[in-house]
Image (cartoon, rainbow, N blue to C red; front, side, top):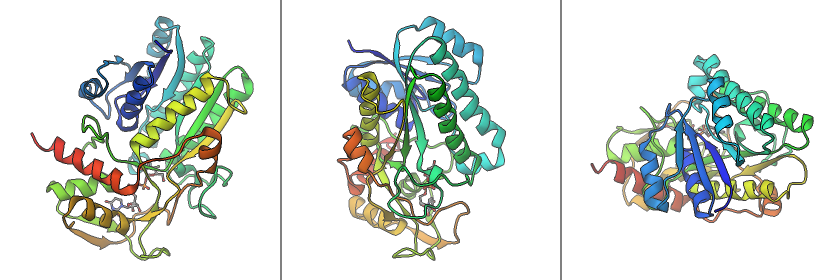
Length: 341
Ligand code: UFG
C-alpha cells in the first residue's frame, strides 16, 4: 500500500474525480468534507468505480479544534490535496465574509497543523481567475496577477500568497498551486459528476439541464465581445484530465522533484472555445438542438481566457487527452443518468 493522502473537499466535483485517480494509483485516501456543497452518496460512486471505500470524516475545517484533533489522530499523512472551498463567484460578492472564512480560515488552520506535524506536501486548488482579463493569450504562469473582481477570486490570490509565505518561512514545506481553467465533464462510468445545488451558474450544467427539460432555455451572456463569434472564450478541461494532473503534481512533491518549494502550474487544454462553439459541440454529441437566447453580458466575465500549457506539459509531464466533445458527451451522459430515477 502506498502513502496516505488527505483530500479535503474529496466529495466535491473535482475532489471526487481526484480520489478515484489516487486510488487507481494505489494511494490510501482519507477524505474530509462537511457536505456543504456535496453529499455522502458520492462515496458510493467512488466505491462503484474503484472497489475501494475511502476513509471519510465529516469535518468542518472552519472549526480549528476539529482540525487540530484530526491531525492528532492522523500522524502518517504523506500529502494533502486541498479542494474544500466555496466557489460561487456571485455569492462571494454578496457574502464576502463567508468566502474569506470558508476559503482562508480553513487554509490557515490546515497549514498550521501540517507545519506543526512536520508534514510537507501540499497541493492547492487555484484558478485562472487570478489572471483576470489577461493582457495576452494564451495565458502563461508569468502573466501578472490582476486585482480580483470578486471576493472568491481574491481568496484564490490571497490563498496562493499565504502558501508562498509559508514555503518561504519553512523550506522543509513544499507546495504546488494548480490554476484550473474551466473544469467540465464527468467520469465515463457515470458514477460521479457535477451536482450543482439549485440553478446552475456554470455553462455546461446549465446546458445539460436545459436539454433534459429542467430549464427552459440557456441564456448566453453577450454576443458583442471582441471574439470571432462575439461570445466569450474559455478553456474547457475534462475533469478526469484535471484529476490526473493532481496525482502527477503530488508525486512530484513526494519524490522531491520540484525545482523550488512553491510552484505554480496552469491546468487547461490550451484551446479556447466560445460559448456558441460549446453549444454546437453539445448539439453534435447529443444529436439534438438546444433552446438558447442571447442576453446582455454578465458582470465580471472576462472576454477570453485560455492556458499556455507549456509548463505543465514540459515540467510536470502532463497533458490533456480528452477533447471538448468528449468532455461534453460525458457531462450529457451524467445528466441523463442522474435524471433517470
Ligand atoms: N455562460 C453563459 N450562460 C450561462 C452560464 C455561463 O453564457 O448560463 C457563459 C459565461 O458568460 C462565460 C462562459 O459561459 O462566458 C463560462 O461561464 P462559467 O460560469 O461556466 O465559467 P466562468 O469562466 O465564469 O468561471 C469558471 C469557474 C470559476 C472560476 C473561473 C475562472 O466557475 O469558479 O472559471 O475564470 F473562477
